[in-house]
Length: 314
Image (cartoon, rainbow, N blue to C red; front, side, top):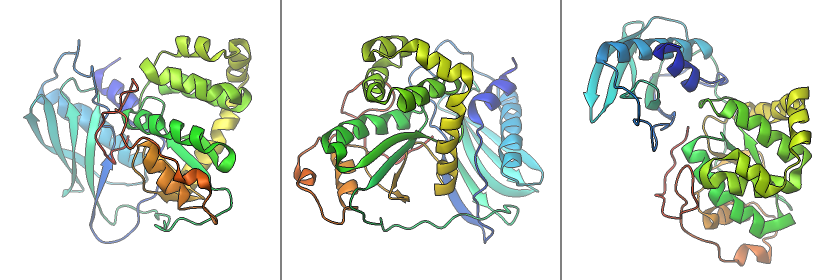
C-alpha cells in the first residue's frame, strides 16, 4: 500500500456536508490530533515532496466528499519540529493550512477558510440546553480517537453516579479516521445493543490499554453472540441509527456531547459532565449535589486523571 493511500484511508471519513454559504469565515477543525504516543516510532520520515503529494491526495478527497468543487493545490510545505506545516489553496486563493506527521501517516489540526465554493448549509445550533424530567445525554465518539477516549473516561463515572436519573448512551460518530475503528466499532455496537449490561464493564477495561481481547474476557461478553451480530450485519443497522443521529445533530468531531438533542459544551471530567447534565433537568434531583472528580482524564489509554482541559476533537 502506498503512503498516499495509507494516509487517505486512515484520515478521511464520511462527513455530512454542513458548511454554510457565506462570507469568508475561518473555521478550526481538529481532525486528530491523531498524532499520539507512538506516532513516530518505527516509521521513516518522508521528505517534503512526498509530504506534499500525500497532502494533495488527502485534500482532494476531503473537499470532494463535502461537495466542494475546484482546484486544490498545496502551495507551501515547511518542516517544523519533526512535523510538516502545509498551506493549500482553492482555485488559486488561500484556503487553509494543516499539519502532517513526519512519517506522512497522520493529519493533525486543520484550519479552513470557508468560501462560496462551500455549497451546503450548516444546521443551526443552540447554546441553551432544553430541560426535561429525564435528560437524554449522548456522547458521540470514535473508538480510537485520543480525545474520544478521554471523554469516555470522564463520562463513565458520571453516568454510573447518576444511574436511572438520566438516559445516557455512548454513541459513535458517522465517520472513521483510524483503521482499528472499522473492526472495533462493530464489536462495541453489538455489545451495547445486545449485551447492554456488559457494555460499560467492557469499555472500562478496553480503555485501560485498548486490548479488546482482555476486555471481552473481563466483561464476560458472549463472544459467539457478538460475532454472530457482526457477521449477520445487524451491527450495521444499529450503527445506522448512531450515524443518522450524528449527522442530524451536526456532529463534526469526536467527542461531541449532545444533551436533549442539542450539542452542549462541557469539560471532560466527571464533575463537568454532572454540571452540564444537571442544567437540563426540569427539577434538579439530589443526585446533582454529589461530588465527582474534577480532574480531567488523559487522552487514549489508561485511567490517569492528569490530563489537560481541552476542547480538541478528532
